[in-house]
Structures are given as C-alpha cells and as structure tokens.
Image 1 (cartoon, one colour):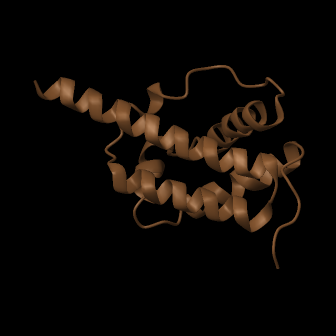
Image 2 (cartoon, one colour; image 1 turned 180 degrees about the vertical axis):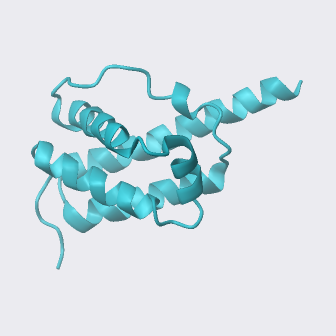
Length: 128
C-alpha cells in the first residue's frame, strides 16, 4: 500500500521519529554509535527529536538549541550518513506522501551533508 497522507501534526512526527530511531537501534552499522552515546537517555533524545521535527516541518517553534555540537565528535564517515539518510527516507516514504514529507527528506539529506562536512573539517583541523 502506498502512503497518501502528508505529515500534518505532532502525532505524525512522533510516528516518524519513533519508527526511524527504532530502525536505527537495530541497524548493524548505526546502532552501536547511537546506543553508546545516548545510552539510557532514549526518551530524552526522542522528545528532543519530536520538537526538532515539529519546528522544521510544522512551523511550531518548540525546539531550541544547536543540533550539530552533540554530533561533532562522533566516529562517523560518509557511509554512516548514507545509511542514516536511506533509513530516514524509507521511513518517511513508508508512512507519508506530500509536501512536508518531501521537505522532511530534503532536510534530512541537507543535515547529513552539512554534518558530514563539519565533521570532516574538524577532523582535518585536528590532524594538522
């Protein structure tokens, strides 16, 4: 069955975030990175992600903060971000279709590109 509903409310955001991170926590490439950093703080992390995506997709400004700093020292490369984007897009496409769903995928890809670029830059700076 093809998704026909767009992302419309916080319940949709919650479904997206919970499903996505459920898959991340089972993914052989990503699970250890996330679990080692987040440890037993998953409820706190998920709540932050609900607010982040609610702000980005619904224009309901419930998130404040800087999303990059917690990621700056992660042991990740392009392959990790590629997997993250692949899983994220699959989850979005599995539940949603429409303008906000496309915006979610665009934003996820954009964040992955920016975060990887910043991480690579920091690693380069630390190597010289």
